[in-house]
Image (cartoon, rainbow, N blue to C red):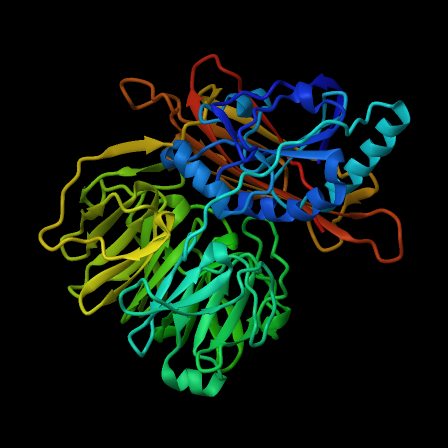
Length: 621
């Protein structure tokens, strides 16, 4: 957390409009007298979703003294759609007012550079602190208590006046369902995500036979269980189910748990996860306890049985990895990925993912919808072990709707995959509202259906693709008979103003000061770590890689190969930093980890600054 060292008046909030205020527009002037917490978020981002959940108890604790405003600052083109944002506010049960800022006006005014970013404004309207990343709840509590005490004494805390109320929403039988599985009896099992429950449907995909979970957010086991925004559902092989005592493994996403469901009784048992989210710096190894119930998970989003691993594979969206779980041996392990959020192929232990969200197994191959890189990936076992490959996708900031050869094709934040009878792969191209198809033989992408409202999961039944049409709150069969379409589509890059830097040598400096009462902790080795890379890689001509210093000299390309400079810049500088600190006082000082990922669009311009300074803000324990 970084506090302002001099008084800076908080800029007014600008955007297209307001949501979740029952039709009211807000301004900082009318919120004067209260503490205001701005949360710069985008609804695709798993870290942003974590922050929404960790702020819930903070909002409840401070009541009228604190007003939280979500400033929605979109990454993807689809997130600029006001109707899509309106749906996301309901889908994720956002409890506070949201400013729709598609042009990033307020984002720029507050110099935000990463999702999520938080900014604290005092009751007199001055910006007093800012921080990036997640895990700030305790630090925020301390700061808010200090501000309440200070401004109560000054007489500037004023909680009179009516605050906006949360907008009421319609209800439907299913509400933002997530994933789907086929049961042995021919029925469907669907995660009814916004209803915090699991639903069994008849083969028509409409008739509800039973509901597991009472619709209330919670983490209760037994015959009357509760979930919190569950996603993936995996029907276990019958012999595995017999030995474990449950038939279905459920990714209970916001509870950060795996839950087992016995179909005959409807009884639910937690099999992995403490309910606390795993946090660490990008690239940090994940230390998984022997007992899976003592492990910290991070937003498990999908689950599938993968025979070559003899285990369930978990799309661990929050750590940008795939984990495995052996239900018989009760063994939880990292299967692929390093926790670095990016796109890199190779051996599973060296590969990078970006919020993997959908899985499908096809004999030896495991297919992955890697949502934040808008990519279709696959894993296959070879003589050298399991290796990761990319079929379609360019990286974190390139997306669109393009058919044709896989090298040129583009998706936009896909959340689901399914294997079709002919061996091709159906992709739930979620933010394009489409079902796409990848043909591994021809190495081509085509479009099977359009106008499908945020498809998020799919399964094949008797040769027909059955899709969870999440934003339409239903299960459908959207693919018409006949040939696939070919769309020329569009190509996008994330719309953020690029930072201008000069060609050649650039000094990168990450500034970190331990919060009051803490010091850098080098008891177990270097206390800081800095990793730098670029997309595309040739933008960076030197200085890439990992060091333990927070300051480094890099070399940028000396010229732009394009004839005309791109509006979005020449590339993205990817910087990951962390610093370990510990409390100064006490017999058992608590450890803290401050960490941040930046993806900074840059434009190389002769005569531009040759230094980039970043603030490492954070305070976690």
